[in-house]
Image (spheres, rainbow, N blue to C red):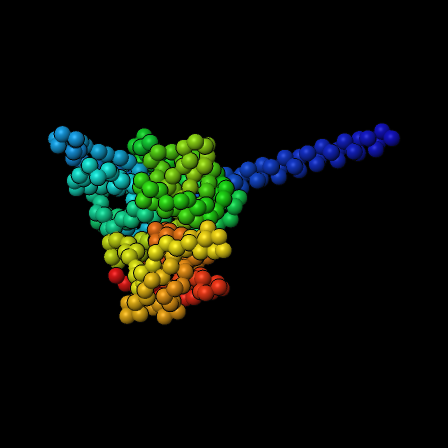
Length: 353
């Protein structure tokens, strides 16, 4: 009996040792993965500094100059010095009573060297800006595939929170967490004009100044641009998926701006329909078949009730849906229309304005 007790005790003791060893191995694996990822991505992470003056118009008509400055984060995406960051790091959404002057942007790379940056283009709706610094052979971040991101994976935020990189020889500050959620959608912000959808949510700590910096995976590849937090919550940070950011950056590089203007080639107005006349759609009064839009499947009298599955009740809602879809002229979309007494799905191609 005593031998059995001793044997069981030894077995339990060895089991505890094995569990402890596994815990240590997991901890070491986590530590190694995060530190390796930070080491790979850090050379391409930069501090962004903006300065400008604004002119304030008072109710008495007086004007006064006020200096404005801010700091944020960004990351180099090519060896010739192209940099991604948030648009709000470069330009604020000022009131109409404010006149802005020329924006001066400087970039500090790891080690402390400072460069003047030119603004290649920015898009306030997606909150993405593309900058350029002169030079070559810059160390840059590897851009990953945000479509492969899964909830529960490691996520590391790198950047310049509260301008702390100046205290650590201009090396980026890192905070680690996991991917908490994907495809987080937010409505159009009426004040800023931003529409941020399909966001990556992380519990990695984000602070003022982290905006524009990279969210990286355990391989050191960028999967998103850290953009904002929920101020009334803890550890709720959101990043723009890098695949979407790459598309915007390419367009900014080519055109300097994002042109979302499109034509439907039709006139429509709000209209009540349904047995109780309690549903709202858009009644088509006229279809211009000579417009640049391909709208041959639409007819006068059709009632548009949805665009790509999104229920719409106004022209403004159509605009929001097209922004959500990141649609451009030449893109095909599907409309759901009420025609006589049945719903039909029809295709059209957005035209140029």
